[in-house]
Length: 296
Length: 171
Image (tube, rainbow over all chains, first blue to last red; front, side, top):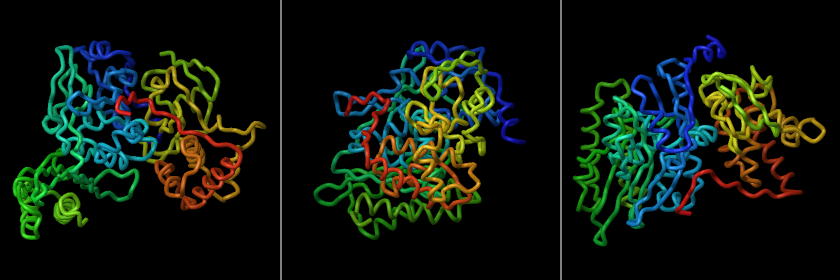
């Protein structure tokens, strides 16, 4: 099928661009229509062209001011509007400085054209197992602030993406993400395997955060994996092993073996598992050294 | 639906269905064939245009999304005498054009880069054109052309960085 006839198969659909959150929610809340939020559209339009969405109405949230805000809360948390683009995150000096992990996740998404359009909310709501920003937000223990006509609910991103195969609840959208930026004494890293540096979807990714006490013992540790499990998620088994201990070789190897076992239990029969097994163990060791050992 | 926007400095109003992509609107309705259809899934950048100062893939935007916005296509990037501008001439001089199909997309992406960064190093140029594929040149000549143009433009004017659209209260 040539390109133009592929475009001609787009569904006949409606389009609205509300100017306020209330108006957007009213448009979304039409149970007799199949309504979808249009954020950047970089994933949604691909689906539309393949005719997989079956959508009646697109609600373009590009001009809803509540979704474009980057704010701080009184207690030091950051509220990142779901409609903020990857480029806008990278152009926010305060975000890049305070949450380098977020910038690391944005920098590797697509190319400039994609980052100029794609939003953090779209990356999460699209529900891909390899979503870079979702993986980062899970590592940051971010909450999604999900609004509907009934009000706003706070849902941990980790829980939200576990339920996403069923889609966001009808008539709702993600307004923002809220998280505590890493403590200045904590170190973060984003390890990512992809065929090339740009325009490549992650084959495996690890967002990792770690901190050490004055005695060199692990005080904080979070590992979030992308493209390794059915959705981005943490592996608490590994975090628990290291907590309160020093990163010595024996402990490190124990953590790597536990991570390997968790991976094999959940993904061991997939065709990519023999290769990913090596990537997962290498990333675990490298990531732990990077954030806990200063040895990279 | 009616779509009203600024196209290469001219106000236009066109009728399009909500499912029409910006690429189709530009090529089929408005007759501007500089933006090219190729992958049509946002992988190749041949359809690049600039919307409100930022380069985007017009195949991944609906025409409706540019209502009220400013769109610049490669046709809008011309010298005063309607010929090639300095960047386009540099592409010719550097041998950065072979089959030419990807060239408009590269020109648009490079202009968007130079508007924000008047002195990019080669790595930054590579990152600026990372969303564009060329199967002929091997990219080095394209990077040369952009580098050459940046140096020449710095010779007679300097441009500041443009601000973003997000309302950043942390800044």
